[in-house]
Length: 315
Ligand code: ADP
Image (cartoon, rainbow, N blue to C red; front, side, top):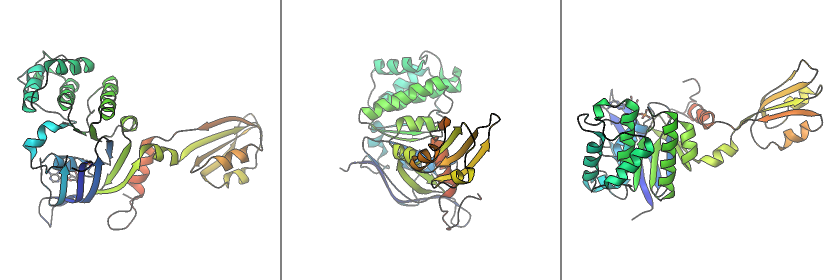
């Protein structure tokens, strides 16, 4: 037994033939430790769903290896009860009621107490007596959330899980993921909703064009990230001096109608030099925006070297 819940080594997936086909994963190496909540980010078409489908043995790799809970995904009969899976477009036979469908899925996974299904349904405000075909997309997605969590699986694999859920339920969902993590379950989640990732994941992997661009600690990323600053001064300032301070980008001083000035810039590191320089003048306002994770990752998507070695900024 190893400590990893998911381990991919040199994983390649090509769709179609060698000449005209599409390389969705180009040698992905990734390890998700047991007990961690790991976020999987990347622009559309990066290969996230392909990776997740390989873990579930819904498709098979072209080359490379992948292990899930120390097993080969092909062993899916043994793995089924140990994994909870939810995709953004959860689909299920519509003739049954939500309760019947969930009980059936629970039985496939070794049995789930009716009380557990009822408790999760209540949390998500899901009516279990309704026939699935009569449910809205959002309510159907709730059925998906319940089936993924109900057997308290060792590993939760969530692929854009909250698409279709309203913001209130997204928050409920975030709490459920946090609880799963606190209880020692492993979570691998791809998401476009950065606030969701921020609130749940300790580490994130960024994938782009089928390769892992970076794996980073969410807190460290936020600390090291650029932030927008704005300092307002009571009177005129030496614009040339302030704009040339080290650690600032796009710095610009403008005059305000009341005879004061304002410095706007992107702070790229420690605020120390800026604070000391500003302290020469009377300051009347200070704003330093925490960067959104989205902005941080946008830089990764854009600046990471492409496979052919050129920069991706023009893409
Ligand atoms: P993501 O989930 O990050 O949006 P996907 O894994 O869905 O990315 O897709 C990765 C790439 O593989 C995309 O270019 C996509 O068009 C392509 N792709 C995905 N599934 C198939 C398929 N069944 N046949 C051919 N190409 C596919």
